[in-house]
Length: 180
Image 1 (tube, rainbow, N blue to C red):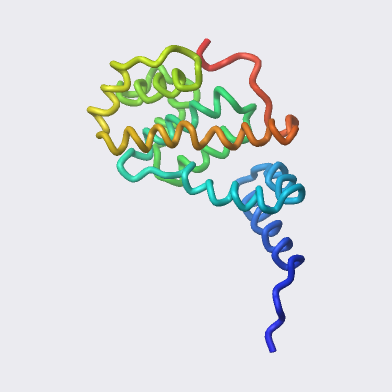
Image 2: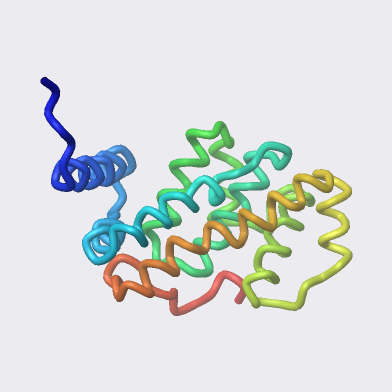
């Protein structure tokens, strides 16, 4: 007779999955374990929202990761930024482009500079520029522009959740912003 699953088995499996993610990416996900320990139902809702944070079908991986990396440069100390760099490599984004995203965004192709500028403006670094938004939509398409909006909003959940859970040792607002 098969063993019935217990809450303890479920808890062990969830913690094991978080630890496997940590191991695979060299990433500190203590904030996820903390959320699960505090409120399993809140953790389940967080997990249910995660697919939104990685959704891009019409938007190119290069544009998606330009936005994600920009968000992390603005709102994360380094852990989520490093994670997104690893994920960009996994998605096939070129090393050169990733280096430009992280270290010399002024060298990005024009359409990715627009993505970066729009992302920064959405984060409050500047005012929303309709011309930049229209160029993005013309270049990538209407559906892709919607995906970009979800990406910008979605990836913010990670550094925001860390700070909200008082896990500042994992994530804090940088002293100098990318937009400076």
